[in-house]
Amino acid sequence: MVTVKAQRVLDAALRLPTRVRADIAGHLLQTLDGPGAAGTEEAWAREIGRRVREIETGAVRLVPWSRVRRELRQRVRAARRR
Image (tube, rainbow, N blue to C red; front, side, top):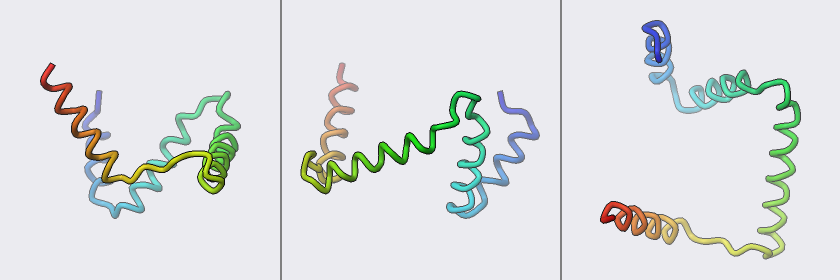
């Protein structure tokens, strides 16, 4: 449930430039991390490093965005027909 005050803050934030909104969103997300989330940033850094290595070594096959988008649209159309 969004309070009137929260809605005003959201409305004001939505008028900010994209980069500023992204920074604010990042700060807000950090406040949601609980006590067990201390290693989250490090874990993401390791995961990103692992994925970059997979790309650089050819261990994974990259798919062009145009193909992914086309396949997703086909899946959505098929799901709507069900």
